[in-house]
View (cartoon, rainbow, N blue to C red):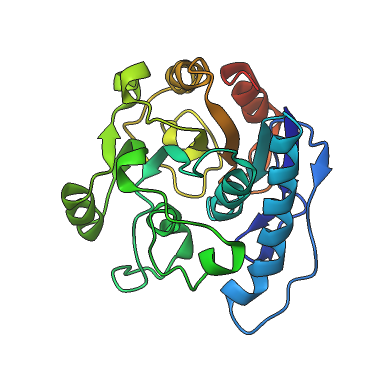
Length: 255
C-alpha cells in the first residue's frame, strides 16, 4: 500500500495537517486561478496520475487529505488504471451525505458535494478536466449518512444510491467492480474523536467503523482508499487532533 498525503482542505494548503500514517509521497503545488475549481485542477491531475501509477504497479494507494473532494482525483486515477470497463464502485463512509449541489446548498460549502459530483453532477467543474466518468448510482453505497439536509434526503430517496448503517454493511452490500473505499473520519461519533471540523453525535465507534472497513477490504476488490482527515490542525494539548486520536485511528483501521 502506498500512502499519499494531499495536505489541503479544498484550495487551502494545510502543511500542518495531522494524519494517522506516515506518507511515502506528499503531493502539493502552488495553486493559482480565479476560482477554487481552477486552483485545484492541477493538484488533482497530479493526484490522479499518482493513483493510476500505483494501481498499475499492483499497489493499493491510500490517499490522505483534509477534505473529501480529493476523491474526484482518486476515482479518476482508478478509472484510468482499470483494465476492465472502468466502472468503478464507491463505498463511502461519512456522517454526511455529501450530495449537495451548488443549487441546493445553503452554506455554500463545497465539501458537501463530492459524492454527488462522482455520480455525475456538473462534470465541467472537475470531472471533465480529469477524464472522470460518472459512477453509476447503483454502484455507490453510502455508509451512515446520519446528518442529511432536506435536499440530500430528497435526492437519495429518488436515486439508486444505497444507504446502509455501519453494522449493516456486509459482503452483499458491497457493489461490484473495483471499489474506491472512502472514509471521512467524521463518520465516527463526534464524542470519540476530538477536533473534527463537523462533529456529529449518534454515530458508530471507531471500533465499529474499523470492523466494517475490514469487511470491505475482505472482499478483495478494494483498488484505492481515501481517508478524509477532516479535523483541525493541532498538537497534543491544543484544540486539534494530537497523537492520541491519530493513534486511535491507526489501531482501528488495518492500513
